[in-house]
Length: 328
Image: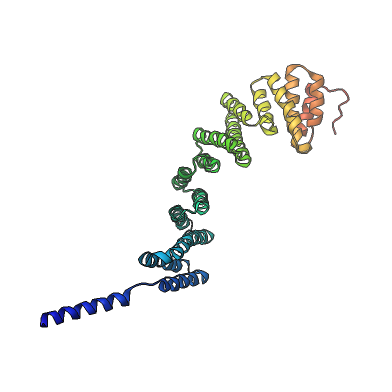
């Protein structure tokens, strides 16, 4: 009897404990309301924990709490997205990237494809921005790492490819810079990103132009010609490239080519009289050496302005004896 009494007492105690800790549908509702209040207060991290608790409670109750469980699950992707967005707004870029990855995983888990897609789209953009920060600080290896991260999420990301070209441009690595500029132009064309396509084209042209002028000024005329002609392949309608080609061809006594590019430069030049004077000077010089004195006099007349005035007038007075010339 004594043993039976003890056993009965234990059974009663266990039943009472279980009843006291059993979860009800009302408990689930209360927990859901508390989680909602946290979300409305802007405590998004606390709300996530609270809604996860609602899901756990609803699993224990089952049945009538399934609807509340679904509503709690639907809140989680949005809350994770908001946290990631706020981190991005606060310029905590790496934390934001990680948060968007989590948001995408949670959204996939609970079937919210819209938030999953938006989150995944944000990640490469963040890596691009972080890469740009490293590039501006001349942290080139870190910049390349960030651009590669962006491309791992979005391989056809023309902006990230273009930025890799800029890294190599800053390092004076012509071959690699052109490789990435060319790739950016190609991808931009495929994705209809006209802005990046234009920027990559301009960057490639300007890098080659700069290298070509530098080679010409150091009397490396053949490499200069090759570089400038390559620049022309990116932009045939650029006045500066055509002007520099006329200049380098004159230095090599290739008068016909110099005339061709000087005339092309004049067609494209949008600047004032000073900008055009230098082109007319190259044109006059080529015509003079080709033996076309009349055309040379006309060109030097237009070149006789600003810093080119004295040289142009010297040719007109002493070498060409241009008709009607009067030194002013």
